[in-house]
Image (cartoon, rainbow, N blue to C red):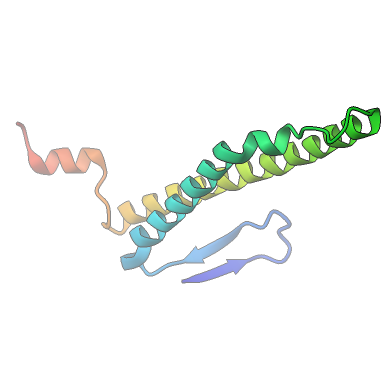
Length: 115
């Protein structure tokens, strides 16, 4: 696998060159990572958004509110990461179809013929 990124591109997008025979393995790994992160976010998201103040004083409440906002920002970034992983997995699936590693539904139905 080879990853090419353009130093002028601040978005961090790049080009990945993958041996066609490894496309589906890479796609599966990326989907598993997206699922793992998604599960972690589901399990731990509330604990990052809503943090119980250690005391009843205004400073504790304000501080924990601010920390919850920071946690929400981190969760938003993690959601964006999962979305990006999903886009990459989809593109790998498209490449897999192009290289004949995966057949699309129409091709598969055509080859099977009428039932």
